[in-house]
Image (cartoon, rainbow, N blue to C red; front, top):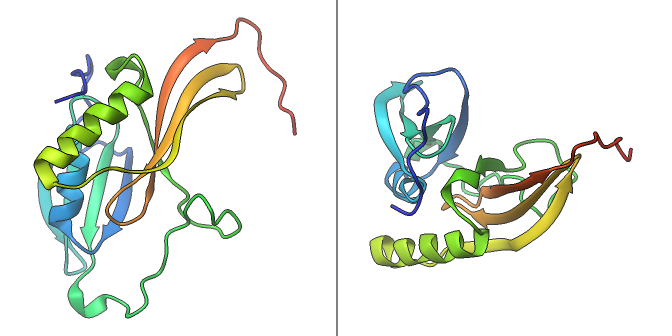
Length: 169
């Protein structure tokens, strides 16, 4: 595992979570295992297979819900991706990987090597690592895509300015 164990793992059935719809439970669980997520509870919701995933490396939980085959639309509804900023809906999910790496480039190389080894697939990078300011926080950010084309943002905090920044809007 590339990521380091969190000092305070999240509870397996805590309220904070992100819910994702998938066409393949197995593919989604396998992808998020790269970030240390494992199923801690499997159940059915409205007839669909679902699972709570927890990571000992990252905070928060994922709820993965598999769309039953009889409900899959012939033209799948597309999740908002980084190019489609105009429509409301899910834009991306985000993980703070600060405690897990020294650089996002190194982490991406390690995650890609794991993905190639485990699934014989390369990670799809949507935006390579770049340094950004988020208010008074300086961080390194990149985006990659999960198997359902949901953008996944990785954030590595670099520093916090001593003085607050005024919003520029």
